[in-house]
Length: 305
Image 1 (tube, rainbow, N blue to C red):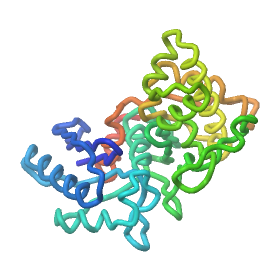
Image 2: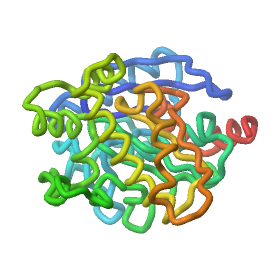
Image 3: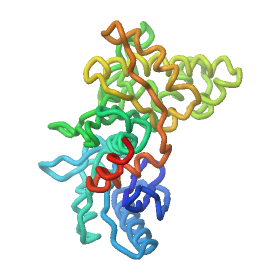
């Protein structure tokens, strides 16, 4: 069983031994810790009943668990911060739950049997409500000593232009984080600052492709800023594949346009790094949560490469 705890919805699936989804359920995300905990428990019981069994459970969250305390940190769903989510879930469900950052789950899914299945080192990008990332090496998440591996969304926007220098305040307490520039909310806020128009990111990215000049300019800024930001990832870890996910990534041609611009800022005379759109769509995160149990993940990845 994989569960993706998102900012607006919680999705759960059960996969069979070949990676096929045999049960699925989606529910709205509550806005408090206790109601979220109760919703997760109810979702697990619902999926158990659908498959008449007790599956292993992997959970992707918008943050991470601090090993020393067992509590959540760095969650943009701020009601989770400081809470013992894993311990509380395991106590209520009376079985083990593996918990990982949602961007890591996305990256693991796409590296296992998705757009990055042909690469050893995969950098998975989330461009959605927030901006996150995950590094997967040989189908294993690289979480790092502080469990923040891949958190590029809270680096500053690189090579800023004059009007980008100050940046806006991020919920993390810093200014000018990548997340504030091309998350869904960041795109909408930047567009409003420049034009006075109040429009959401999905509308802007769609309208940009249908002749709307203001929206097209906003989309071009997203491409430029994403290419600059991803160039720093290539300069540091030089991944085999970069895979884009999240709602913003669904804009047709976005991955290809970013790939075209990428070489401007990469420290190499040859840049062949592919930038690809996800294969599994909104299901990437939830599939990756299921892959947190490695025996199944290893089996699928071995067959697919």
